[in-house]
Length: 112
Image (cartoon, rainbow, N blue to C red; front, side, top):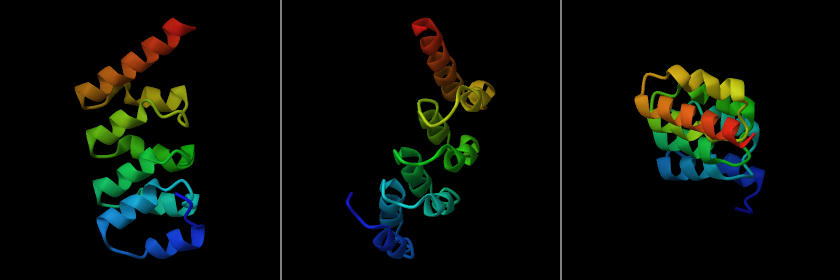
């Protein structure tokens, strides 16, 4: 977790999915690197970005259209995304994502 940005940039040159997933999930990874990793064809790497507590909203927004439903499901509860961002998932092709989005909104507004 205490990896330097230079080390993470060096590790990002690897091709191993597990290494790249670790870099994507590391909170010290620079945002520019996270944006690049979010475009990976490997779901594990994109999931690492989604699970990264320091991934910024702009980095996460394109992942709202991720082809893997589990990733969209994880984004429903991400605190970096706005309500408007999450609302885009209300008509998601996957029923579990739609359900999760509506559940998140109902809990939010019932607590208000």
